Amino acid sequence: MRDSQRLRWALAGMLFIGSPTLLAAQGTGSDNTSYGTTSAEFLLLGASARGAALGTSFAAIANDVSALYYNPAGIALQRTSGFSASAYDYVANTNYAWAGLSFPFSGRSRAFGLQFGTFGFGDQPVYTVEQPDGTGSVYSVSETFGGLTYAQNFSDRFSAGLTAKFVFDNLGGATGSAFAVDFGTNFHSRLGGHPIQFSFTLMNLGSSISYGGDPLIVQVPRDSVPGVPSVPTNPQQGELSTKAYGLPTVFKVALGYDIVSKTDTRWTLISDFNQQISNKASFGVGTEADFKHLGGSGFGAALRVSYSYQPANNLTPTALPSAVADEENLQGLAFGGGLSFQTASKFSLGLDYAYKYMGTLGPTNFFTFSVGF
Image (cartoon, rainbow, N blue to C red):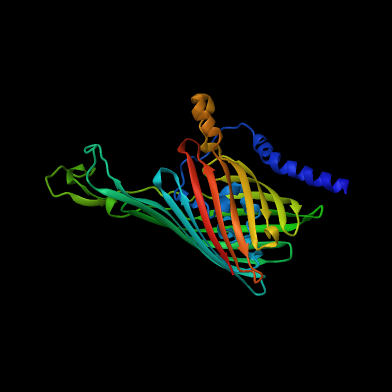
């Protein structure tokens, strides 16, 4: 018994210090990170308040409808069908919404799901060099994606899932589209008598986005065309060429372990190591305490907290005033909780909230409503 307890706490320590140690061991070679070279960054905003509160490590234990986004393999672990809808009050008066539906079939050995996410803002004034006070025109941004997911349990310990995504980007009058896939796995077993989960995911692997539309149509003066004599004539119509940018592909390895695992009480520690194509390697740690059937009723509650480190999202503290540096050091901190109700027939309702701090950009709020049936 004593050896088992030592094993559990040793694993817990590894979860919280292992990822930073791996990052520190990467070396100090030249930095060729492709910062700012991806489009459709809204694909990284998440899907649920539970996922937002648990940060990048949530992929290890994603087992609800939002697993459609965080780890496709997770929907194969659901015992009932479910629907979830989320609203994210993001920075600078922008908004993000996500909704998903998943259901198991073939005796819960397989699962299918679909999801939809959208981000944007509207009616922003247009300013130009010639008219710095505004042209009187406005523009809007609308970015959306839709996805179809299939997942399967290949054994009582291993599941995998695949998502096909269609991405549409409308920036004012310029439009672009792309196709991508997500792939995820989940290995689940027991260690020291307690559940342990290991997963790896690959997100947003797909085509690049290039843009077209009326704003790129211009009138080119004939005498400005290289190699053509300067002869007075009507301008010729042309289209500006845009560079195609790839999607924010992310590879992630995550681990979760239940320190406490009882019928109605669970306390889980999670950690991950992730690599985004346009950022340096990053890590996250988090924990979730879940309580079911409070006082013998159908009500439950959960508490969550995490910290996710993204190198490119942090300014250099030594170059900043102390107050600003303190805000930047808190970037990536998230916490939240949720309330749930479940009947004897497995019908359930859930309401979750997450607070995520974005450094100098300030706090953001994530809300999710879910139904299980």
